[in-house]
Image 1 (cartoon, rainbow, N blue to C red):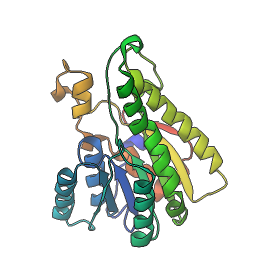
Image 2 (cartoon, rainbow, N blue to C red; image 1 turned 90 degrees about the vertical axis):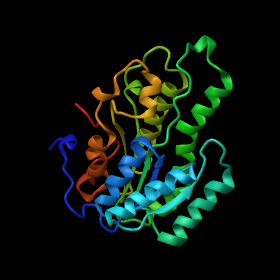
Image 3 (cartoon, rainbow, N blue to C red; image 1 turned 30 degrees about the horizontal axis):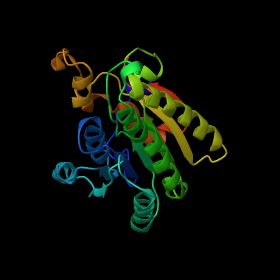
Length: 249
């Protein structure tokens, strides 16, 4: 079976605790709703409290397990913020069964020669350094799970380099190296798997910013490309380790 064709069954993620960054909007929100609908207890991680509370209410309206909110601004968080979040998750849940790094920052679409240096540093930090830190501090909670899954959200520009994608493309390429390295370092730990998924073209604000002339009605909604993620977060995807997956053909 191709994971792209995966159809979640009721209760697929029952009793699993899954944290999703960037859960306030776009793909992160869609995935949070999908995971909650499949029975997971979702930890909504993001920087906008009002938007996270809105997703929280949407999940409650589904009759899904009660979610939790983890307020964290990846652009400004310091070590104490990461450590505090890790401690809260350990104290409140005792383990973490899934971690999806969906938060991302597009930055400038400009030539390297003219790319704004502070913007470069911010995009690299949010898209690459922050996922590294968050994964590192949450590894103890992931190790408490009998079946933990870490997913880095990738992009087509990580495999097919193009001009003018700047720090975003460099960071996404770095995430692929991080995924490969971490999966090899954890290969002796059968209860933790690490993969990356390219969700592909989607009707999101980030896509509109990257392609302002594109008709958004020609793009699939984020909710339609969550299948691979649900597969990898479930027991069905237990054999997948260190892989790169495309959510769309």
